Image (cartoon, rainbow, N blue to C red; front, side, top):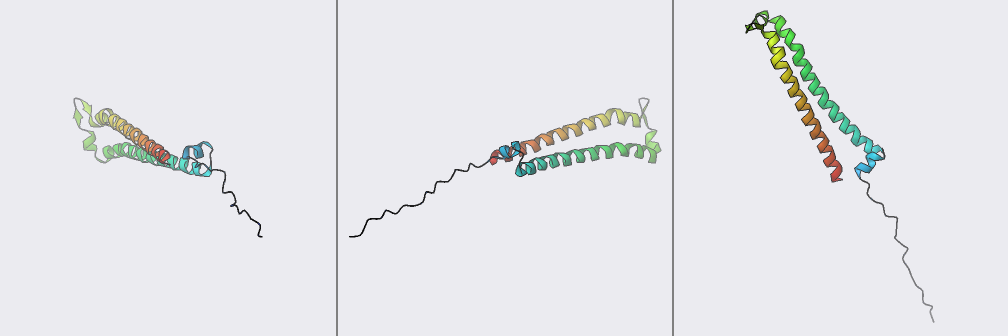
Length: 120
């Protein structure tokens, strides 16, 4: 008579590996988290340098324009020369516009970053 043999399957239970979130990767300062953070920093830096370059370019161009075209610099409105009017009434609102542009785009970049974190 043959003896009965019980055949069993090896246990497939493995420790469950929870998928790690990107926020966990960033909090733990892993290599992947570092890549995401450096990407955010590069985007913010690129935006800041672009706004700074445009603002400084416009401000640097004003004295050149008045130096090259002295007739324009001699124009007077209500007894105030044109360079002073431009400095007082054009440059400051333009700088405020550049600041608003930077702030709104920096917030957009951060929102996009948070959306990427939430998707994973």
